[in-house]
Length: 93
Image 1 (cartoon, one colour):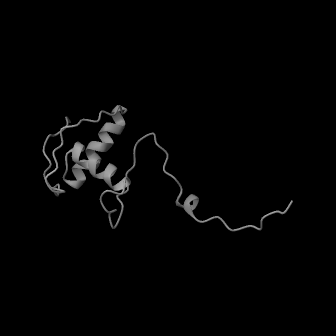
Image 2 (cartoon, one colour; image 1 turned 45 degrees about the vertical axis):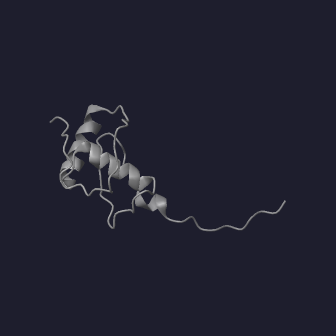
């Protein structure tokens, strides 16, 4: 399941020359998860990772419904952990 070099389905963000390269080391099972997620979106891995990173950086707007991605070996956070903590009174002293 090699990496594809096309960006079918990707929406161009204008004419941006992409001549710089970022290399990331990942475990084989994580790479497979990236490839599967990219395939579901109709993108190659490079375009999918670029969109993910640009959204996280605030360069492009977030998706209306964030994609749920499960990576084998990486625990999924419990949504209850992201609930606001109840306020407590400050201790004086």
